[in-house]
Amino acid sequence: GRGAAAAPDDVSDVLDIVTDLAEAEPAGLNWDLSPHLAGAWRLRFTNSKAFHLNGGVTGYAKEVTGVQTPELIMKIQTNYRLLTFEEPLEFKQRSLASIVGNLARASSIAAECSWSVGSAGQLLVTANRLVAADRIWEPADKQAKALRVLGACTPAYIDEDLLVLWGQVEGVVFVFEKV
Image 1 (cartoon, rainbow, N blue to C red):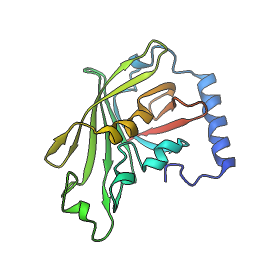
Image 2 (image 1 turned 30 degrees about the horizontal axis):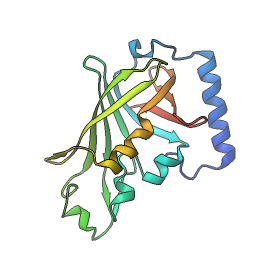
Image 3 (image 1 turned 30 degrees about the vertical axis):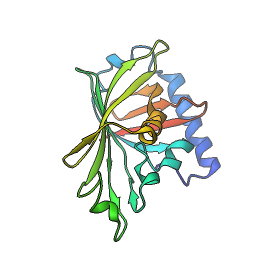
Image 4 (image 1 turned 60 degrees about the horizontal axis):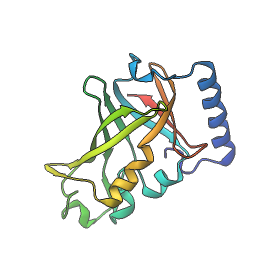
């Protein structure tokens, strides 16, 4: 999923397509004013090694035994500049995490964030808190580090169906599809 097992040729093809899209119709410096930005976006592809090593944007799939986060939904509100990363949780059979700790009885984990536009046109994301079921807490160092993978991306392309972000590391891309 999400590009983790993509062959090098496939990754190269995606990067070529993204580059072509961004050159033909760049998101530009006023991407935050796009009428298409608000809403829910599902991550379809990334070649970010950090994202894949963390098993997602919150890092819980890496840090908690028996937990997987197979999907990422990014919800953007333009009125108040709020952004939520939501990852549905899957627990492996007999995972203690499903009954004990912050993730117990939760169907998903959400990182509630605020966003702004950086001086170079980046989408700057600041994580405010994590929410799972009825529990709320501030991101610990490991979660804060995992969330930074999408903390300062540069919008490359946006339309009613597709949002493409260049990662902080050259050549890293995040491709989202409108839900």
